[in-house]
Length: 497
Image (cartoon, rainbow, N blue to C red; front, side, top):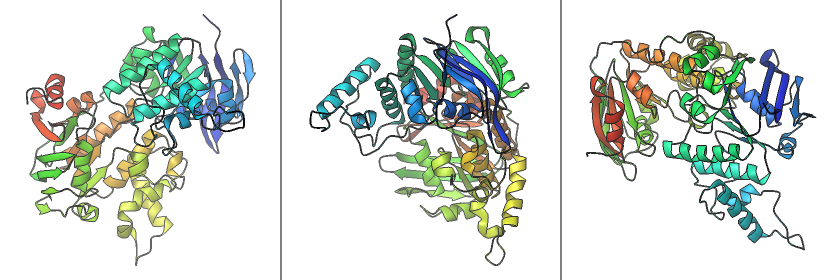
């Protein structure tokens, strides 16, 4: 076996009393894609930040080509040939694609002026190597997440990166975009780069990677050839136990209609959308990316004002574009983008949890820290939120625990109708099972659950009915007994309309 290109040995990192990594080892080899898996809070993000030079380990050593490596900052990581592609790229929106790639390193003319023609030419060469067609002069603003990630990969190539770290790169991508990204990753791997791939999607891991390393509770558990593993074996190592059922669907008593949507339309996004959700039901809203699902639920909740139609909750008509009225009527929305729409990242865990009900917790208009903490503790314990302190910024939590905080925030309002948009995107298999169990228990208690999901196994495993959207219109209402991958995808692609 070839010598490791990049190695970590005995790496540990703590934040105060919380040990994020303990004695972790990892070896990345040239020409190999290596998966790093683990539950949220297992230490994956901390390890990535160490490789990116953002954080430095407390103990342990890094080596590159067999020589000791010290990364004091991100510039050191880039100089060493390590590039990190994050789930949410950070480009300068008002600069062109080419300017983003060569920011601070633009080729110069004789008098020190930027050679814009050379910048564009080099950018085209990079895109040719990646096999993608992007205009170097296009502004970064408005690029899809997939194209933004390709720009970041092109930037990595421009640094002659030999190690590419891909942190949840496919979480917000469609199937076609994932295949394009994988084609690029395979090309880089086959050209001799070492690829570290972090994902919760096992089909992607086994399709791309030759080696899989498992972390649990900040510690190394195992490293094996992917060919010697199965999904069940990996899951057992990740969670340290058997996951009895990823989709623990309960049989429930279906009750009266709680959410009634009639002829909802918003020009350019969706047309004439009508459906009902009864108490005790979990209804999935399925469809391809861009079908209008998230736009529909945002309109129902009052974030966006619709052009025509009506929304009724428990028989009461809601005013369009009025989120306060929606919340007062017993409606709750867990949004797709938890960081941008579901949380205030700078605020504490307890403050985020109590935001929608601060007035209820106040006495004579004043909310004490003691009352806020007590209210937040109840749901933190029920959902097993892992945090060093309820007063810690929610930004310090793992993705799965951030999702639990968003759920806790809205469940504490005791909603009659709960809308969850991509409730398990970017969270580990153990937390997914917990979220599914929670949704099933809520339905059993009479809550009407409307779930937007792009994951067909989740749709088929949890829904009593599947509503399918295609190009802004509802194309099917499929009962659980008749729902399968073929029927849902036919409706989602407009086949047989």
